[in-house]
Image (cartoon, rainbow, N blue to C red; front, side, top):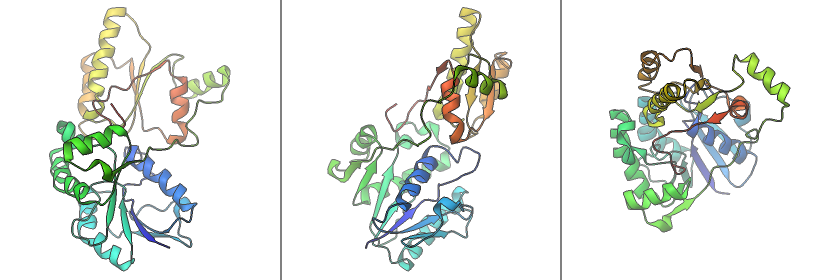
Length: 296
């Protein structure tokens, strides 16, 4: 049976922006792969990743880094220096990097990659400069060298072909699945009302959920909300939920400047198990993101 390595250092169960997007995708993928025996898997994770759902068993080996790979610089060191050594020790047939920047450029083991988006090319201003440099240095090279690439959407595949020149026949589309709990809440109207009350939410509210960072375009959302209130004289409160990413300070300052403190709420990070309820209880969901790999 083939021995397959999985670089999953972005998996996090923390109550922060790190437990969002790519992390949730990787988490669900690992949980389901562990239930199968399609290969012998060696899974590389950070030193703090210890959930019982991923514990080692025959055909499924968890290897934790001694480095604090939740920190970008430590993760870069692990990926570019330690990963090829660990891959040889594990006698892997192939490595699957669950993020395109998680590829060692010096390893001899074939490495396939999963790509979520190429926003560092399409929207470079949405990334800090160091991240831009790292992505441009490592991601493009890793993708071009990979014998196979998995894209999460037709949109991302098109970006890979048109912007990075990856041959279309090397890119397979692997759509993300749907988490078991992500469905409309099965609550009565009264139960939903009590749930809102318990969280201090009004009967009607406009809802946004996403990491607070420039690419999500939250500043423009708040401007639009202020304009709606100016023109209509009233509007349901705006609930802006999600963990703090980077360059988020201006969002809070904008709310103060526009005099919206009473009308814009920031509940912070919302666990995956609760998110369907927040969506279901809202009057309206808004998602003004400037770019997303699934097609925005």
